[in-house]
Image 1 (cartoon, rainbow, N blue to C red):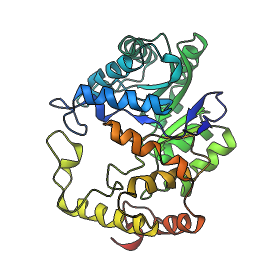
Image 2: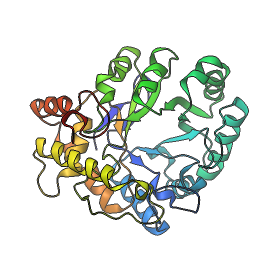
Image 3: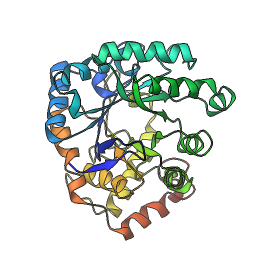
Length: 323
């Protein structure tokens, strides 16, 4: 597994990390990717660590803390092998988030208990309104204080949009941001996020690299999602649009059978401003498949340019072609 610097934080991460939303599982009233097996989830984490995955990205929201509990079990006895990233702000999907300094500290302490560690490497605010952070500087001051106390090594923003992530770096000085970036959402390039990260020395965690599975090469317009899978709420026309757009960009990348996910991850890793990409991983096989993407190297520059051109005027998958 190749390594990259997380901006100028002094933290080194594997270029492919472990997105741990899915392993949190599903309970009534929450959303995820459906039901899971803890044994399979733990096996996936174990295999990822064996393969050299260093960053594990989780949150109290994922499975109402269950994702963190599993991560804590998986890293027991090998804390030094991983970079732990968790979040604060959201506790559940049916209650309002709380970004007050007291709530942030309370959330972190609960996360440390579930993870069975004395500190996390990255604490990220979970989708806060940028205006709130601008109006209440005590929120960022709280994060800085947690860093000074040794409870976190650095802090970041898991942004609602690449535009919010750009402002977090440029205006608020966040050292780490997390944002969507994939073959069907290239706003991190067109909207200036990568340029801001480069100028500000910020680390970028790229999420949704497989576009909720639509860039995995396994989706069709007839795909039926199980109960508890957030995608089952999408309507037929929306799913068809995403499938058609995904097929188009994968064709541009000349992704052969079984190569879709690798091509999608290679696209993201073709941009040096990305510190780490975090595909959602739920099985050992997915850990193995995603871990091979970095070794394949970047996509050809001409292919990247075609994909960026396809996404001009972004308004969702395939917007530039009317798909």
